[in-house]
Image (cartoon, rainbow, N blue to C red; front, side, top):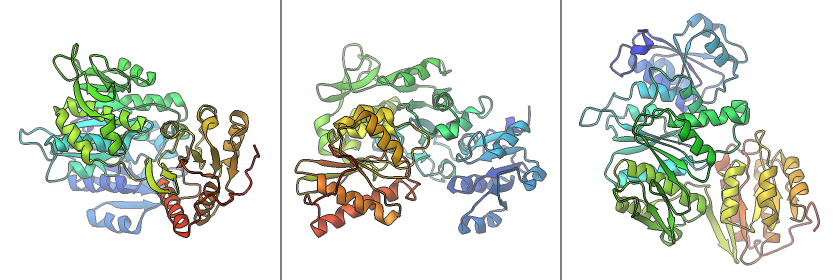
Amino acid sequence: MSRLDSLTSWYADWKGLRVAVLGLSDTGFSVADTLTELGADVLVVTEGASEEYAKLLPVIGARLHLGSLETVPDALVDFDPEVVVASPGFPPHHPVIRWTQESGIALWGDIELAWRVRDKVTRPDGTPAEWVLITGTNGKTTTTRLTAAMLVQGGLRAAPVGNIGTPILDAVRDPGGFDVLVVELSSHQLWYIGNNDGVGALVPHASVCLNLADDHLLWHGSFQAYRDAKAVVYRNTRVACVYNKGDEATRSMVEDADVVEGARAIGFDLGIPGPSDLGVVEGILVDRAFLDERHTSALELITVDDLAERHLSAPHIVANILAAAGLARSLGISPADIRDALGTFQLDPHRIQLVARAKGVTWIDDSKATNPHATASSLTAYPGAIWVVGGLLKGVDISDLVATRGPSAKAAIVIGVDRHEVVDAFGRHAPDVPLYEVEATDTEDVMPRVVEIASGIAQDGDVVLLAPAAASFDQFTGYDERGEKFAAAVRSSIERGDADGDDAGSPEREV
């Protein structure tokens, strides 16, 4: 057995292990901090580092190489690492990743490292926390937070971690310990997990892929590679593989998955559920999966009307709730606890968030809809909206979205560096929709102009929906800043009294 094969516990002998850590974001620092605590010899290799983390590295006992990674740096070659642990921003085609694989060096991500050392703090029975894995093109963060909230309401110590923003290694090392870690996984993290199906492979209690649509194609290189990475989420699942009955890709992932014998396939959608599913019957969310009489009965979870009072009734949010409930029920959480958790749950900022209602117009911030699949859900929830769309398309074709959802929009306001692609799609697929281009490029100018145009179009009963179907990094630091700028511009317009139907200017294309 090789030394790496023996490193499956916090209490194994990690001392002196040469580990190169790629990247120094929050994830990279958590990896370096963990490994130095274990006694490993750590070299962090990165193109950029915050002043704080750069100063902390020598304090914790790690070394730093700062410089270009367009080629493999001599410092990394001379270090001769036994393991490379990469931050998820490094794509498979990156020169350092290719060098690592071609050199036969073990390649891990932070998730695999966390799995190997998950027994640092155990439950009262001496076992590590259970893991629940969540992925999908859209809805990951909402479902992760929902699942954690349901588990906590049911009396379990649970934490949402991973791609949601809290490095999983921070949770593994938390001295308080947890019963369950609810792990949001990006396709990038899953690609690194899929790199190793031997020692160190994850064995989750339950898992879900919520949906699958084009995204991150430049990172993965193809849709098939993206799909294959997502499918890794079901590998070795012990109890429940939750899947979206309305998304054939997730069904086939479960069918093809190599799971632990006895694991069940649990479906969810907005229709009437079968005897191993969760679904909706006459406006009631129900569970027909986790009860002995599931062939003849169902358990009520909550009504759609109750969710509407909590602003949680958009169809894609209801689907996320059903997926989360399936995961929570697999861990024994009662329907009453699920209902109580939903009573206080609030969506993340910038996820179909109500900004304001003024003079009969509703302004909605769904800046987190960064791809066509997420935006399609938003437009389904708000048909006939004045649609604010565009940004950095990341190689994704927006034509299908415009063809299916564009014609029902009252108007479209196009922003971002890839405006021409959006405008072209409307010209081909929705030529009757009034189209306005915002040519402003300065961050401070974009959203005031958007709101100015929308205010001139909107009438009593209309919805103005920011659902860009694109990334934000062309004009903003992230989808959060994009949403914040939109909300600020809306509030400023309302305070000035401008949001009253003044002239928006001429559309790019007259109807």
